[in-house]
Length: 288
Picture 1: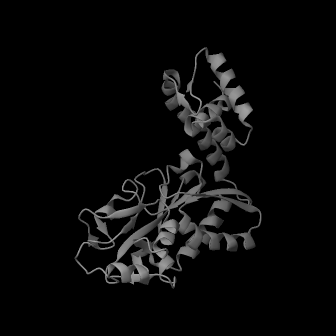
Picture 2: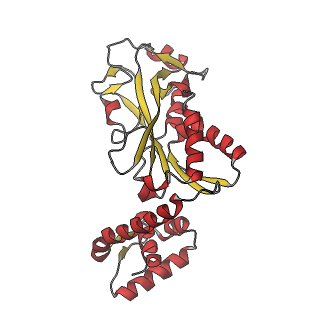
Picture 3: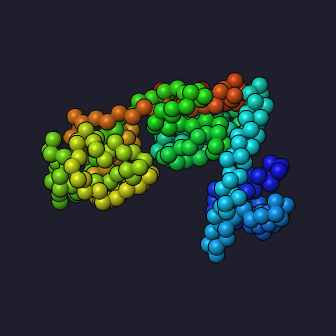
């Protein structure tokens, strides 16, 4: 098996459709289909169970997956080691973060980076729940939860304050909640339980008992929009909400603090372009 065959197999396994895999691989859909068919013919067995809407792994595909992932990790490790001694201030850097942190801190840092080092280009991947950076192919990640891996370089960038917010119209209609009343009778806007389970037990300093969650969303920017539209009470980053004239902070004595972590693969920490990006990110978060 060669890596070129393996990467087509992995793309379809992850994406579930030829169209999405083609988009990930930057080729046309017909090419993906031909490569998968040729790979299956070479192996003498099917890798996928095809339906009109999706591709799912066959027993052989499931059996191969772990080994093919190991191949991918090896290829990425080689690429990282090749980049580790690169002292040129040029090339691509892939950053994984959330939309909120990207808007408030990463984009301003990239503006300064562009002015200093125009040969460095950035790919920005946004998601609340960031997977292993080696799996996603990102060079570094900025996240609100400290990863448990001992193999990565981890540094705290900042500690962010969060608070409860609503609109005046919402409070006029539903009343202002009282401290210690568990936000009973109020509509709550939350991250999904599987992403941030602690908020379902304690929401911005208020213990919850059978909370009335009317909206779940994995984007804080959309949670802010929902709060601004009067859908309910949202737990938002203070740097995001305090400057918004449409939002009122509720129970300001309640505070919720979140550490923000920089996660970097050790093979890349000495590359000049990575150090330049990290320096601008650190400067940006130092403003908190």
